[in-house]
Length: 306
Image (cartoon, rainbow, N blue to C red; front, side, top):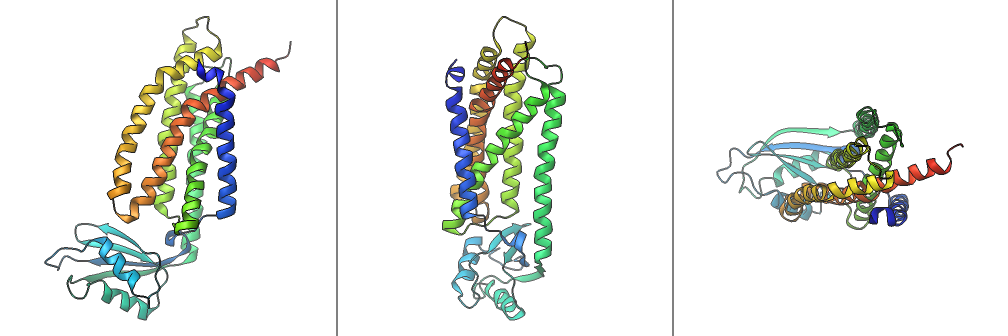
């Protein structure tokens, strides 16, 4: 029953982490990437090259070494079998031509330019707005789903309160990795892109799954109607799911760590944010959401009208 015994410590730790994370985000901020602030988008094809397409790292190093272009951040994403999608800051036409010439790597890899487009700031701001709306819609959908799923469990905690607690813990799960990314953004220049938003949405999806598993076990044990207190039922239910939840999370993290260590540069931040989010997601499912339920039930009993 250590969850009951140390519930205030678990809750205090989570609250402290969130407060520190909010301070970090406020101080360091987040640098918006090309997807959100605009830039140039170049699509190329190496199907005419006898050597296939070059490694993305070779292209990235070549672009960054040419000081005349002054490109500090470039995103290179593979497309189809022989193509690349290259994102950079806004380029003038001479800079565009210079970049196109670079991509053949001194003639070793014949390259065909398929398209070149500029992404205006207005497009980036629209993408940012849609990303925020997507996250808000996911949060409300989670509340409604959990309220509906737990509608038959109204005592001692109402079903909609399970949804509210889920949202509180989900905010915990995405604020902490966002703060760590803000630190990376400040010290390494990492920028927020669509993969970062995708990582947050993935964290929400996987984390809410863990919480529903724990809450569902609580629901099943409550339906048995034994003599245990609500706090004991929550603690037992959490203990019954802890091994399953940890194993699933470690399995996913086991895939993400090699992706971060050996994967392409463009997916490293995605893998890192997702790994951090999953770690704190499993923590909040077991040691934050459950203690919050117990604390809420105790508060209701204390304030119950005689």
